[in-house]
Each structure stands twice: as structure tokens, then as C-alpha cells.
Image 1 (cartoon, rainbow, N blue to C red):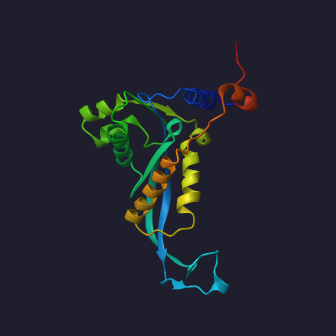
Image 2: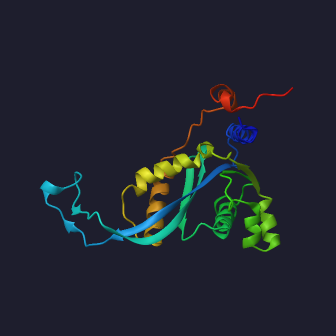
Length: 223
């Protein structure tokens, strides 16, 4: 039983009940580390008898070269069927702050306030804006944010995780990408196609259902 978990969970579930409002969009944010890898040997054309999958034209060596890591940031607006993602070299407070500035000033410049759902990580703090920008700019950005954190051990409540799962299956898969520029090209192709198809998320889990199905995590009232 954990009152903090329940409080954060019900807060997120209430946010997901909000109707679509372009002036107050609900945006879910998440991130994913990725290993950049390249082939250790030049690929060769495969004979039909040794093709690993139908239509595959090359034999892929199981050995690979590690080219460092990067971090993929993803932002999703479920009710609008919109998302975008970009990879950065690092996952720091500054990188998060730069992504938030892009979210507010480039992606949603006309929104009065962005309602942001995200995990409660040490980099995901308003203070990160003050580390990245002058105080006037940090305050300007923070005033356009309404932040809602998922509970600890409750990242499954973040709809952006669904988008990351789709990204991993539809775009990354077992593909070997060895540099940030190529990765971002592939990411743009993926989310542009998904946005064109207006792939949304129909979230059904509600507070009432949580109080029934997750009754065991609710604390016992004292009064």
C-alpha cells in the first residue's frame, strides 16, 4: 500500500480524461537509451538458400562494432495522433531543457500552456531550465508548463511508453545504425509516417477502474 503511488496515479488518470484542447494540449514525454553499432565486416550479397528473411539481399554478420550510445527523446500528443522524436548524444539536464524549449517554442508556440506527463527522473525538473537558460528565459518557459509526474514504479502510466514500443518495433528493430545523423533521419521518417496516418491512443484505464483492479495498493483510510 502506497499513498504516494496512488496519488500520482490518480492525478495522471484524471489528466487523461481531459478533452482535446489545442490551447492546452496534453503531451506525454519519455526517453530511451540506444547503442549505436556498425558492421564489423562489409556485407555481401546472400544466395537464396541462405537468406535469413524473405527478400533479404545481404548476409549480416553477427559481430558488430560499438559506436557509443545516444538518447532518444519522444513527445506524444495522444488525442491529436501526433508525436515527434529526436536523438541526442547525451541524457543530461541541459538536453532535457533544450527539448522542452523546442516543445514550447517550435512544436506548440500557440499553446497557452502545455500539460506535460513524464517520469519523475532527476533531469526532468524545472530547475533544469535554470541550469540551461538565463532566469528570465527559464521562468518564461516554466510558466507555460503544467507538469504531472508518473508515480515511482508506475512508468506504465506514461502513454509515451506505448509510442516507444511502436518505435522499437517499427523503426529500430534489429537495424544497425552507427551514427546520430542517420538515426535522426530514420526517426523523422517513422514519426512523419505515423503522424500522417493519425495513429492515436485510446486510453481506457480510469480512476474508477484503478480503485477496483488495484485496490490492494490503496492505503486503508484512517477516518
